[in-house]
Image (cartoon, rainbow, N blue to C red; front, side, top):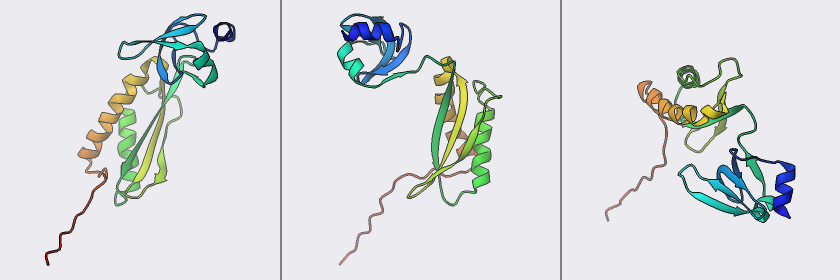
Amino acid sequence: MSGITLLFTKQFSVDDFIEAGGVSGTVMAIGLSHCKLKTPDNKEIFVPNSTIISEKIINYSTEPLRRVDITIGASYSEDIDKVKKALQSVVDDTPEVIKDQPVFIGITAYQVSSIDYTIRVWVKNSEYWNAYLPMLEKIKRTFDKENIEIPFNQLDVHVINQ
């Protein structure tokens, strides 16, 4: 019955990239009892339709644009404008970013040892990973070049001799 429900509700189609039933992949087939997904690392997964229909379904393929969200921490001692300018240079240096769509670069949280800055930009759905992964690398390289500290957890151990 759940296979018929999936076929008639058209929540996703063959070739859509979805997340359902605890897995994600490209839909290869929709059957009466299960759906066949191919994962990004080329594994075939057969997910029972009853599992899919009872959980949330995320379809990443329905819209032509997708937003890239990247959050990075910078030290409290860093100048806010300097960090935002460095992040803007990363956005400007990423050709996949659609320039006439809104760009957000700003502070989104205060953590224990860092201030979180978030970049939100729009790309073509098919260009998501071609933008996301290089932007992560560009952020690190840009922060290194601009001497912007990315804090990390540390443990200080003090040994007392008695």
